[in-house]
Image (tube, rainbow, N blue to C red):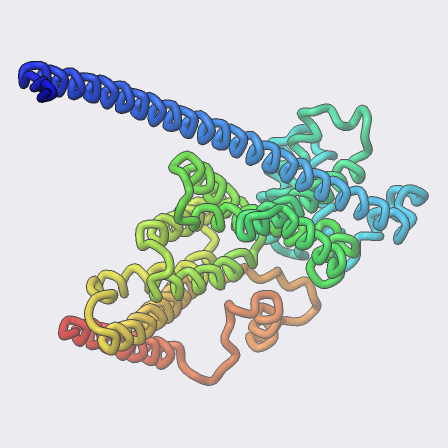
Length: 454
């Protein structure tokens, strides 16, 4: 008997295939959606973890900055306390009388404290200020402007604060003066701490800087031996200026921080020049370093120009505050600024071209800067000498007449730069100065013309 074989219908097979495909599509869609959901969850988790890490980094940065600032303030305060205790032990300052305390100011620095007492003894601040402007008791036989000659703005400001704050009721004038100077030394140490912190990125470097400053205090400061000296008032502002300049030259600094550093640098530069007669020499060395950095393209030109504007504006303001002091017109800092601006005007393409051409341009640039600076300084000195008034001679109170040679000798001793004890005629000296100026100018314009071929 033959077995029966059933043929499977094609319709059923096709329908099964479609059903299987539909089931596969459904499973694929479910698995794809599950994968997308898992990816979104992982992405959200990564975002949340990055947000948590950023928040933790910000908190850690704030805590580190707060701790560093507290360490800087603590170092400055402890240094001021140490200086006060050391000064009192060295001179037995608290156990002495008032006159003996004033005599402890060594190196002729007691003269500055004398002007401070004179301001406090005056009936009013305005009257005391006028007495310093027409001082006829400091230099025998002459009436001088003591504020201009001795840079007495620290005593003027401190006496005004002492009067306004009513300090005479709870502190003696000498302790108020001493406390102001020692407070500035604390400010100096704090500025050095911040400067080292910015350059190294850690406040540990600031602690090391303060430690080395304390160890070498005999070489870096004379505040213990002679408290009223001008450098004891001015150097703290220079430390602040260096810290602000360091922050300003940092490339990844924000605009707000850069503006704050610029404002701080402007104020500290002006104050530094106002308080010390040798401040422009120190800033001249700083300007030389800035010139070399700009010539080697280590600093952006925009920032270099901004720093030079601060130098120039501070010099102009100090020149006005010091009653048109001619020494500032012939200062090396102003000569360097003038030479740098003129050399940059003639060398607009100094940082372009191959290596050899740039090296030659650099050498020519430095030569132009120093040539222009020396020419300007020499010209201003000669001009100020020609325009300076002849000093008044004291009347003859002796029995006999005073010869011309003796009068010139006495005038030369009082004013070394006003009389030339030489056999050269003044007309010959003027002609020699004109020849030198002509030679420098011709050399300068020749080099400026050669620069056009590079």
